[in-house]
Length: 132
Image (cartoon, rainbow, N blue to C red):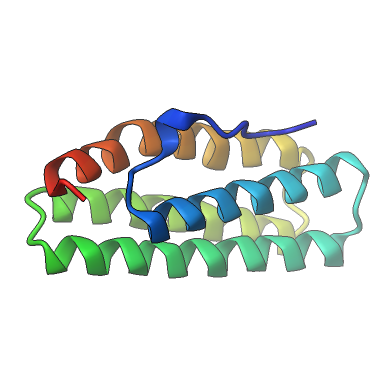
């Protein structure tokens, strides 16, 4: 089962950003599939670490583009990035402490809903404002 289905409205028109968005969606869907298949704790920890690292790197790319173009909503956009990274860290910490019993719910809440809304609103505005 796919957690996030790619939709054309997720595209920003910035090739590097769109490429990374697609890769992140694929990675998150692979993590979701591993969870559905009953992956063990170590596999889930590796997936969560990879998701966190790739999302962090992607946010760095977006933030570089925003700074380069003196994007007017840089602070707000960056704050959303930091919020998701904090939520992902919380999920990773809870996983390490065996504090979660339903990773699918946590992943859905923290990642799917956030990404869908962020792509549709913040990243779409970034593309429109920068005219890239």
